Image 1 (cartoon, helix red, strand yellow):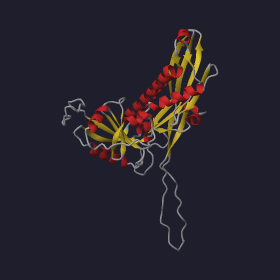
Image 2: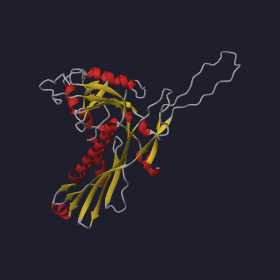
Image 3: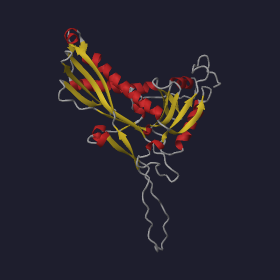
Image 4: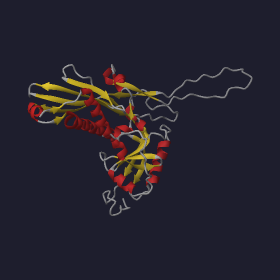
Length: 336
């Protein structure tokens, strides 16, 4: 028996498809296109994300007389956010001489496949941790299983609309399992037709319905009482495939259909007489804090006071599971 080999380019393409299939939360964020080219040569692995919101001035001009010059106004309101590539997600495993000689191993199914799933899980954890740490400007008052999900979602939508930064398309809910259980018991959750929708199998499976026109995504990897409503532009994610080093026996890098990148290599470790399989990716993420003052100017247009600004592209929603701990059978306790 021996290892069932596969071509390196085939391995990485299948691995990326497996990784992509298992991702949910990174698809609820904005992905920087062609991140490898964007970060190539960037000082301190940091680039500046341009934040929109340019503002011009319109004035009335005199009719027919033309006795005064037209008033010139500056275009204002633009700013930028520092974005750093600072995570190296790695899954490595050894293949001993005994395994390579005596065991029948499929490189894709038994080695690289599980590694791709592990890398996807780590990326997912990074994004969810970032979501949980974002300082949101607006928050829906605490709600319970007894509250109408439609009214809760309508309030979240109202709060998000106040800052006029996120269009209706691209909005979604991200909720934990207790919130999902409570909302499933309501007839307010409309059916979600995934036909023709962009995304991954994991994302489509995580969508439990729609509220106020936006998909409701349930994640088992967030706090059961977590709830959020917002636009994909609230969080930016970059993912870059590392180069294949010259010392690798074989390897290749690639990018998936939805823009996720990774690299797979095989090298030899003479200290332990074994091959090493490595699937890895570079990543970075930052939330877009473009809170503005009464004049419409960014609170921090240069990024120096970034931590003082709030994120206006999403709304925090706090769920109180009550004394029943989130259980809906028997029916949820209406008292907090």
